[in-house]
Image 1 (tube, rainbow, N blue to C red):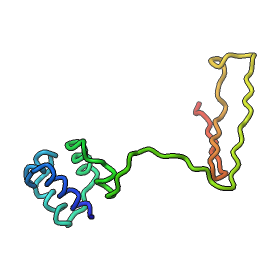
Image 2: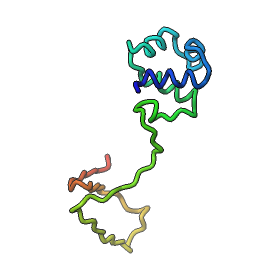
Image 3: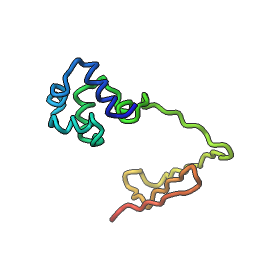
Length: 119
């Protein structure tokens, strides 16, 4: 099912005419006509207006045709060993008195990024 078919389905499910739908989401009727006929693909503004005007429409379904709930579960990659790092705390200064020298982010693919705060 193409995106214009999903838009048509939303229009039909809400018992609206194309003109009423365009007015409700705040776009020109000609713009809607171009989307429904497949002449133009709907842009982000169009999709945002549909989702805002019809909160029961799942954004993933509208865009991709697949219903998603937004949750995910991290699956461990085979062959990657997860280790924990020892964190040492300094007893000499409180955290408020210390300055950050750098932040290092380690990625699962074995790479890392090094960030230094700007002065």
